[in-house]
Each structure stands twice: as C-alpha cells, then as structure tokens.
Length: 468
Ligand code: BG6
Image 1 (tube, rainbow, N blue to C red):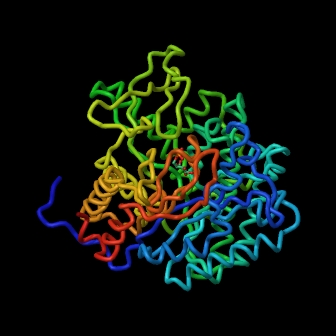
Image 2 (image 1 turned 90 degrees about the horizontal axis):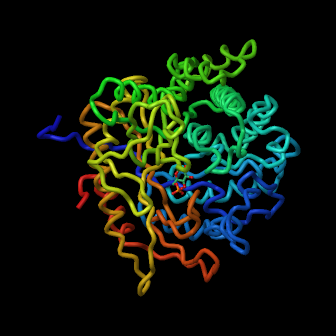
C-alpha cells in the first residue's frame, strides 16, 4: 500500500551507527584480555593483522567518538568483549578491561550520544569453548555472571542493552562465522541454541532486577522469507524457513516458548534439545522491552526435492543454504545484488518490520543494515554513492513502516566506521568513515570521511526529512 502522506520520524528517533568489539577494537591481547573463539579462528592468511589490530578503535576511541559527534549520531551501538571483562569467561574479573569500557562510554555520553551495548557479538571466550562452549550448561551461568558484572558496572550509564547478536546466524551459519566447530552434529548445535536462549533470558531478568529503567532486548537477524513461486509447496517451504530462521528465536525471546513448526523440525531432525526442569519458567519470565534486529536482505526459498543436492555447500549469513527435504535456497529474480552476492531488497525491510510488529507488538530497533563494498581512497575521498543509495532506499522503507503503524525506536546502520568484515576481512567496507589500512598493510589507520558521512549527517540533522 502506498500513502500520499508519510508519517515523520519520531522526535526521539535514535539515528545511530553500529560496530562490534572484535571487528573494530584491535588490541586483541592487551590489558589482560583473554582470547576469544574469533581470535582462535586462524583462517586468515598468515601474517594478516585483521582482528588483532582491526580499526585500532581501542586506542583511537576518542578520535572516533569526536567523528561520531560531528556526524550527529544520537546513539552508537557497540559490543563489549566478554574476554576483556572476564578473560577466561568464568574466572576472575579483569579490572583493566572493566576500566576500559568506562572511557568510551563516558566519551559518548559527554558527546550527547546514547550508548547501546551488545553484550555478546560472536566472541565467546576461547577458554569456555574449550570446555564445550554453548553445548555446556555451565556457559549459561558464565554468561549470567558476565551480565551481572556489566549491569553492576555500567548500569548507571547504559539504558539500551542487547543480549546476543544474531544468535540465529550463529546457529544456522556458525561454521562460516567461526562460532560452531566444523562437523558439529545438529543435536549439539540446537542444545547450544537452547543454552543461549536460557542465558539470554537470565540476563534479561537480571537486567530488570539490577538496573531500574533499563531496556533490554534480543538482536537476531530477521528477514522475511519469500516463496520462490506461488506453488503451495513453495509457500509452505517459505513458511517453514520463516519458522526455522526467524520465529524460533523471537517466539522464545518474547514468549518463552518454542515455535511449534520449528520444534517439529527439530524433532524430525533428532535435534530437539533436552529441556531441564525450571528452564521454561526462566524463559517465560524474561520480558524484553523491545526487539532489535539486523536486516541486510530478504530470503527466498522453494520446496525441497528431498535430494541432498538441495543443500548448497557454501553460504554465509545472507545467502540461503538449503536443507535436504526441508527447503531449497532460491534466487529472487526481481532483486539486484551487491558485489558480494547479497540481494538488495528495501521493500523486504518494510515487510519484515510489519511481520515482527504483527507478531509481537514490541518497539523495534534496527541494529544493523548496510552495504559492504570494495573501496579505494582517492585524494582523501571515497565517493560511495552506492552506499548512499542503499541506505536511502532502506530509510525510506522505515518511514513507510512507521506510516504502517509500526513503532520504530531507531536505526543503527552497519557500520559507523570501517571495520573487519566477518567473512571478507578488511577489503569489504561498510563505514561512513574510511580507515586507511589494507589487509596486510596497516598503514597509518588514518580516518577519512566518505561522501556518505556528509549525507547521513544531513539525514540526521533533518530527522530524516531530507534523504536526497
Ligand atoms: C552481521 C554481523 O551478520 O553482518 C556483523 O552481525 C557482520 O558482525 C555483518 O560484520 C556483515 O557481514 P560481513 O560478513 O559482510 O562482515
């Protein structure tokens, strides 16, 4: 439906930008930080400094926050590295790590920027992983304790908390991200998933007990799934994939129960997790204040033929990997693609807003959306008109969603500043701010404003009224 009159963005709309600790900070072993599963991933070519130095935000946060202020950000979403706070995940608290995060948080507050904290963004402490990681129930308690430290330490400064970034992507594409060990059986993967849900619920309950006025929510990657055709079996396959990819995670986070279709799928797979006494009570007692979600593109699937060839061998979090007998990944012929093969679907963004709002009626916060591209600095400039187009098209759809009656708290595109991509290292860039480094050559790591910087600055200063 098209409206002649669009509703304006709310006055308090949080125009934001996103990063995550391991992708931007660097200082991977400084000031007592322990190694995470990402540090241990070791799949980048020898000699690369990718996650070790990243964008060196750890040492340059003051300069970066000054740039965020100039950009006009109302909020900034970043993650806290568990391994800085508790280096081995469940042992001693590291005072230097705790002290560190007070500094960027204070700098943000001084700059009038609302800090939005992700508690866990893919970087599980390696020491916990060695003890079974999320397949072990002990990790649930370790996360709950970590969350208590965060609430006690930063609760007076932080209003918006996100529990776990893209839990669904860690489960579905964990091998590609580096959070699931190659060959782990599905039963173990979904037991780990159950434990993450419990950990999230415990953190949610603790947050409400410990920090009056705080707001906390999950942060999965949600995108609507289209059927490849109107064939009823394709429609059913899309419905299945929506349940497995999206609603499994949000039904649990919001209502504390397993989605019935997703549960039937898990049973069929022999991967239904064991649920201990008391788990369901914890899960239902957790009440999120909002739903955060990351959106890059929609997904399209068709019916599975039942052959193993339905399963593509490689995929990443935005390229659907089919599953034999369940659904087959399909290309949407109506959508263009980025140079990394991700389809671009702004209207799917609006449809996703509607779908989440219809199901849960909780305010929505977009915690990631953006365009990854190869970029070159020329005379100190990056002319990223393609990024401006992508972001404009998506912001327009937020306004359509607001006009549809969806409550939207804010928009936090990926990424506030260039950082190391999950899959393609430093070559794939997302930021408004260019960081001058190459994959193997750190250069000076100097910051430059891209064309999208001035554009987003105008969008924010007009509260979304001028997207030109
Ligand atoms: C999201 C993650 O899946 O997508 C980010 O939360 C990630 O950590 C982003 O960087 C973009 O993905 P990629 O692979 O292009 O870096």
